[in-house]
Image (cartoon, rainbow, N blue to C red; front, side, top):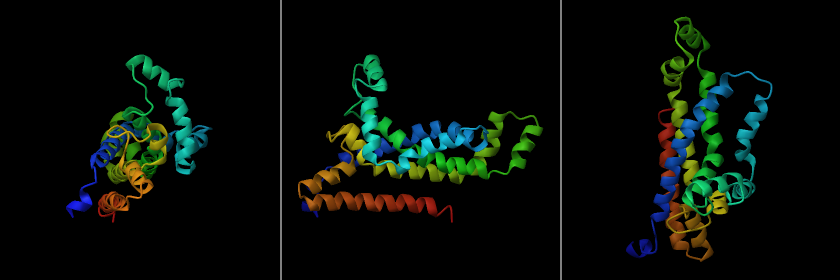
Length: 222
């Protein structure tokens, strides 16, 4: 057993957890207003916005990664602004793969929350407005408590999807030890070097971890 784990570096696994944690937190705050808007707003071009948000679900990660690479590079809009403000590039750094993960995982948070907002009984919302409550108070006191399982689903799906990211992270961050080399890239590198033992260990950890996280979702939603 010690021989099996001797070549395994768990730094990439903890880096994946770190990336998934910050991605989930950022997307939680970003997705609440977006989902609320998609659920209740009425405007002509809402379908275009919904399609744009859903693009990461159908685009190959290499395509999305390529455009993010351009956008985050020193010649790109965000990349050049970031470098002027902080003196560091975004490409091949943790901050870069964090931004890429937020974009790539956006629909995994927005879709469950939007479905949750739409499922709330409209009579509850109207009753709140009748009692003189503001939209913000109604959101936090009435709507959100009634869609807690949608929040759990969005949080868990976003987290586990980010943990397993490969293509976008590889395009934007490469494979830099301790900085951008997440567990999925470690599996790829192990297979490339024909180190199947290490690949088995990494894959087994990711498989068990993903199963337990999904089980956590389905048990309360039974």
